Image (cartoon, rainbow, N blue to C red; front, side):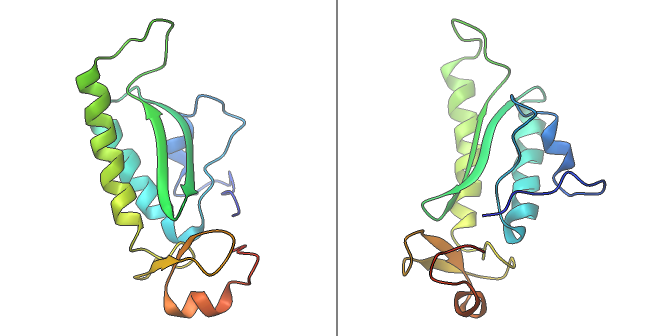
Length: 133
């Protein structure tokens, strides 16, 4: 899957300031970019200083991997905060299972390739067997 461009005006630009490693990029296809932005907005509403490790598609679902705040040796958040963060990100993972990664239309899990993808019927016909969107 292609990462997003860092071009000005990119919908995912607000997320990049939370990346632990600024050289990484958000690795989702265009159909999920708005969903990722909404997930970010929900996380930042509860954890303004959250640290983002990765955003990607994993086994046909959105994986938004983050800590409530930047990690320090010994940890610096409670189990309750960690559980709340996961509740928020898990809700978006669940939503992603019905959204086409390629175009954002209603989709479903497609297991006909080596990579599990969430695609609508139209995009299912357009994505080649190797699974690249």
